Amino acid sequence: MRAHVLKNLNQKKELEELFERNYREVGGICLQYVKWLIETGEKEKAIEVAEEELENLGSHYSRKLRKALIDLYEDNYSEKHKQNLKKLYLDQPGEEYYRQLKSSCTDQEWKELTKKITPKLSAGSLIEFHLLEDNLKEAFELVLESESLWKLRKYLEEVGDYDPETYFEVYSDLLADYLAGDTGRSHYRKVIGHLQELKKLGLTERLKEYVEFLKEENVNRPAFQDEISSFRVR
Image (cartoon, rainbow, N blue to C red):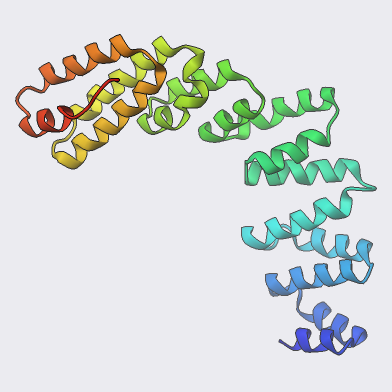
């Protein structure tokens, strides 16, 4: 609060002294200090403070400081700019930082960098990375290897067309196991939801056969028979 008052009163010396006394103790104050230094044109000092406290703060403030450093390093410190983008992307994988990081590299630099960052990505982030890179084959294989109904459903429209027959086979096998694992209408409706997704692969005859298989395998489940009776392949 006092910093806000001093800032409004334009008391630069008193404000700087206040920041200097407190920025090592509180993440929010450190971030305010860095922003204020940038506003007042003291970029080198802003870099010094941000770098000093980057590893001492919790993830929330360290991310914000790293974002500030990315901007501070952009014009004159290309390597440090890339290093911070890399760390931020690994901390928060997503399209925004992927685009920024890739655009900061030459083709050869990007080729070398991908060898370093891909082993550090989680399974889900690695799928997203390959999709952004248009590596459809790699993304397809990772989705199938996950043996996760959730991932198969999530990425069906993005990678299913790469090999619809194989995608259907893996998805349907997992779905049959999922169906067998529980009972109740809520469970059965989730199964129907997955069948709706399988329709998107365009394998109409195969889906018809699969639905008949599920009916036969679960003939002793009247609630399931009732729920699936409303499902239409076309």
